[in-house]
Image: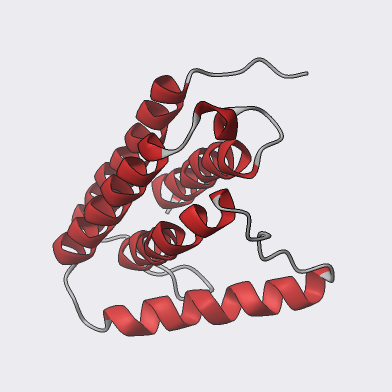
Length: 151
């Protein structure tokens, strides 16, 4: 069984990961990093994360209350759904400047942390959805940081 990370430490890592994304995106924008082959630049990476965190503020409490996570059994269908959600999120940001999108991400992850702090400790055990999602988001942020730093 993997070691359990105390909730507050996990939530601090979660916040730090988003702040590193914001810092990296801002630095990439100053270097005039352009969009990658998929059309994603710093603004799109930040918007993508903000959108998913906004959705998490609705989904996580429901999952904690007993609703099953929305898992797509078919990987191809899951990718199509994820791509559609990402495209919708990015389209919704329109021409907002990066600073505004960073503010949306910061408010979204802070709301998510407030919700996570309200949950019982049992949700922060390895194998539990909330714990695994939080760890996964931290890793996902790191992937985007690496992508933007390479750009």
